[in-house]
Length: 437
Image (cartoon, rainbow, N blue to C red; front, side, top):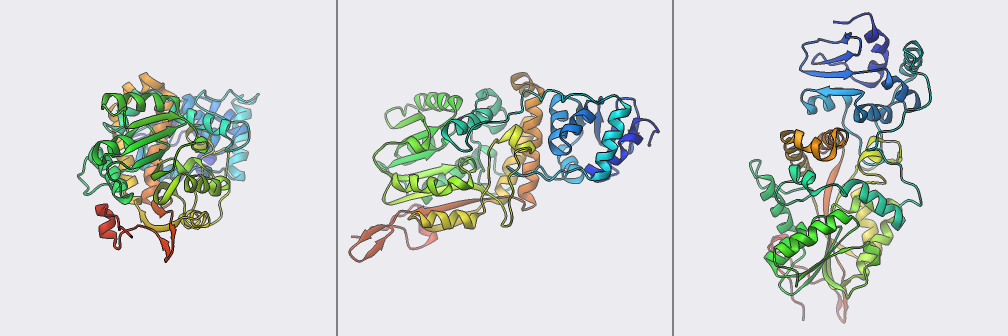
């Protein structure tokens, strides 16, 4: 059904933004509808504020503000809505949702008709626009705090027992989320060749999952650093509860400020996305300096496809999810790491695994929706739901990927460069270390 009221005014706007789909209807504040009212997916535009927001931010940001503020509501299954109607949520720093000239003209016309002209409405409190020098220490701390300094109880609702906010590794489609996260940690421990008595540095340690697994199962001494006060507090508590305070230390610290004796191994899991292309060389130089000769680095980070990349500070992801987040093509990661002295020894993609991980998270969030809203409010809960669902689709469609890059700091010996790496990948995954006399 197509009414002759508000729906007709919005028809060119909707057509400019979204693909037509018979399974989706769009309802408006006057009761008029575009599409089939019985469609399984419904978008409800509740008031003319949407027009006012689109006047100042036509496209993705204006729609995001309307959605988070409650001017737009979504009903029905999230994945068909994103993949068939809105397109996938863009990756960090990018925007794919734009309004063409016809749509813009329709916005202006409708805004005049429904008296939506005026100064810009306040942005929802969930939105952030960070000031200062990009990827400076103070700005990075603010960016990290925006995303991670939320109550542990909220994250636990969808992350599960391990409190792990990075890609899991599924050995089968029926593997549970918690088991898949433990399998991921174990894979990293084996790639790093961890053994009892070694010293491990975990950069961006989150709520302590990696250092706990490595200390409990491989007998290492570990230091975990994070810029999130909430993560540091929770990680420290988990270390104490596990009885590992004598072997595991958690610090609220920037990795660039670490002043410790060299480590045997370094893991960086889900932190690399916050480094930025301009700081890539400095990142690897710091980690190289913190490793002993023959020490290994495992860099576990989301990557983007090759091609032009133009960061967009007005994207939904940048303003609401990962401010200053930036993805790097894996070939660039490898090249810069090796320019800094590392020798890259193994690269593994876990793209499909991240799609599966995200679908577990979204299902957990939806299953605990009322509790999530009670903890962080409806706006932030909606942000997490749509960003995680859109990210799942991106990984499944190959629009983003994730790679584990294993590198070693070679030791210069009388007969050449000594890596201490095993001869085969089979030995590598078993955690074998080749002893060179």
